[in-house]
Structure formats: structure tokens, C-alpha cells
Length: 194
Figure 1 (tube, one colour):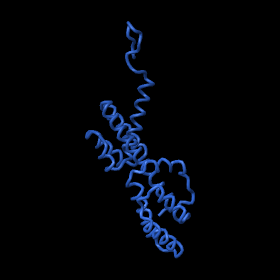
Figure 2 (cartoon, rainbow, N blue to C red):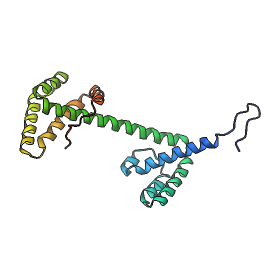
Figure 3 (cartoon, rainbow, N blue to C red):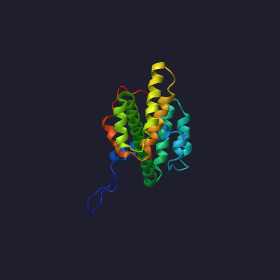
Figure 4 (cartoon, one colour):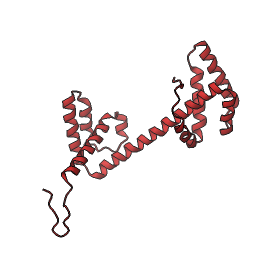
């Protein structure tokens, strides 16, 4: 029983519903930790006492046994201080945001590559207006080589080189504005992946 404070009438501890919500939140955090690779886990502030439990949970593949081990991991995690769990959550959220920014930058680069291949000199002029430090001759040559590769059904060597050149150009100056602009035109069904 929770009990009440005689003077204020407030409950002395969280309700059973709140305790259950907290436990389910820790269980979800445990599932995230189990889904990570060893390299990703090593970058997180996970206490050494939890690592064997995480590895054991990864090792078990039988559904019920895995679920049981995951619940045991959550029980061990609930024994840790709230600060430890908050630090893990913060690190996971930070990694998620960084990954989203990286994917947005990649899409922006791919969009510029397709615009150059489809738009020719007009798209190149737009790119050079935004990035006057770009090497017009190199970009024009890579576009020409890529179009020739496509025509002859050759491996996409110049296609990849064009991507690298655009990546170096756009990310060299920390083109955050370009990344934000790209989020609006994220849906490009004609985009070709290499």
C-alpha cells in the first residue's frame, strides 16, 4: 500500500500504474540496447554490470526465452540509478538525431547529383551560384562521364565519383541550410541508388 502523509494528504509513493509505466519504459530501453551492435554499445554509457545481461539476451533466439531474458535485463536495469538510465537515453537520442542529419545530407547530395544529370548546364549553374568554390570543369566532366556510362550500361564509376565530389563540396562548409532545404523535397521517386 502506498499510504498517505497525515499532514498534507499526498501519497507517499508513485501509484502502481506509474510504476508499471516506468517498468515498461525501462523494458523498451532494454530492447533498444539489445538491438544495437557491440560497436554501438561500446559508445554508450552502459554500466559493465549490464553488458553480460545484454549479450545473453542477444544470444538467446527462442522467442519465449528471449522475452524472459529481456525482462530479467529490465529488472537489472531498474536497479540502476535514474541518472544512469537517463544518460543512456540521452546518448541514444543524440545518435538518432545525428543519423537523421546524416541521412538528410545524403539525400541532399543525391538530389543534387540527379539534378546535374537531368538538368545539365542549368543545374550546374545553380550549384555554382550556391557554391562558387566548386570546380566547374571537374563537375561537368563527371556529369558527362556518368551520362556516357549510363548510355553504355557500364559500371557506375563516374556516378560514384560525382557523388563523392558533391559530398566533399556540400559537407566541407557544413551545408546545414542545404540539408534543411532538402527535407522539404525528400520524396524523389526517380532517384537512382548505387
